[in-house]
Image (cartoon, rainbow, N blue to C red; front, side, top):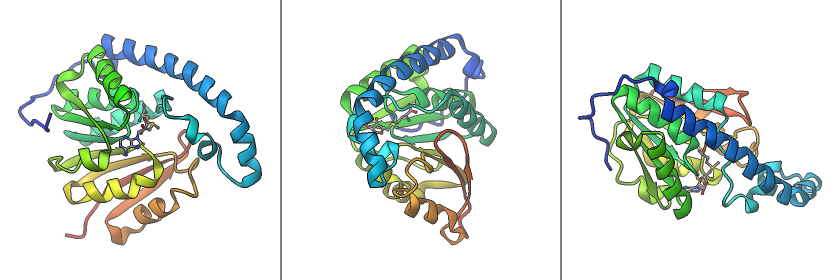
Length: 235
Ligand SMILES: C[S@@+](CC[C@H](N)C(=O)[O-])C[C@H]1O[C@@H](n2cnc3c(N)ncnc32)[C@H](O)[C@@H]1O
């Protein structure tokens, strides 16, 4: 579903809404159970990675296909509040998994009268993310585009006010460059895992840290490292 500026906002209870709060609580619990098992299975590869200079996440990556790997509640709330304070109406996410971060961002879209567009290449995850958004009562303000975000986001209408990058790390730059021509001045861009994928994400962090590329950026010690950028193009 395309961004629809006819929505007028809900002025609801945001993250305190009963359906949102209940769904998030249930999903955070389910995620910590499943992901603990996934990382236990990946442990031998993680230990081997210590001897070959690979980070924990890089070594575990082949095991992560059906893992949640969600944002923390702290970071989800931080993005929610940032989107609210920016009055972000067109909110986009690269890498939605089962929709935990999507619920925080769609809850913000409901408050601002905007729309949230998530992306997920795994069809089962995309379907379940849509069900989870529905359980949270957020279907009207959100969609998950199934498939490779580089394709599914190509026809996205701008201007984009808020972008969250959380899919596979080698695609942060291509996805950012795809959305860049559609970014609204002052748009906010968050990217997760800049510490845990330090090596892989170095070109991305270098790119958003160079003001001549149009971004002002800070790196935050939230979770496994988060970059926060504001799009300030020269013209
Ligand atoms: C770290 S998880 C996302 C977690 C989610 N943001 C959350 O907080 O709940 C990364 C997800 O990105 C998805 N992904 C990776 N590459 C993708 C691509 N090219 N297009 C769409 N989704 C992709 C993976 O399938 C995985 O589910």
